[in-house]
Image (tube, rainbow, N blue to C red; front, side, top):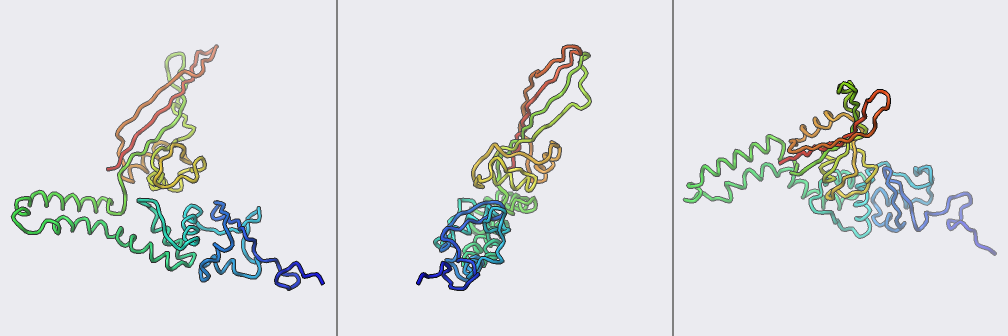
Length: 286
């Protein structure tokens, strides 16, 4: 007698999950083993894929299982579920968000691994101010350097008040744009002098995301790690002043700029000339 194709033996029930599972997490596609997703039984993923049927699980239009969470950070969730170890890049800037993802996926051990570093970073501003007088005990040398200690304490207090104690780091961001303008016969410029097609952003990925947030278009370089550099990001708006405001709010100051221009088109009858230009502004935060 032939055995039924359905391993569960229940007519009408969907077959179990395949050995290779495709996931769509926040628009990012992941392919992994079924055993990886069930490696932590009490986790959210473990419960989802331990069901006897896939009914009730959300899918995208290509049939992949869909999870509405941060697709970039999910790679670290998946790495942890493979071997229950936490490995992050140096100076990883999104530990707080990753801890929140670990809590959502019900991974308490991963939450514990992330929590000590977060606690230390959150108190970094206070610890930094206290470390100077503690390291220099009240001896003759510290008395002689009292003025230096006072200056260091004042600088530390200024950093905390200015927001540098919240994990912000120094670095450069370059903003560039291509524009065009019309120069008429009488050397009069068109009223719509600056036509900006796209504002490009170059620099470290983590800094660009910190400054521009949701207004940053990462579609041309979507998987760039936080500590790597990119020149392929651009902004979703075309107002330079808006970009400058965001940089100023984040503590950046312009330190250099340059511009070039070429005549791209000359009208035969009116002598009007269309000029194109490329301009870059370099910003720095100490």
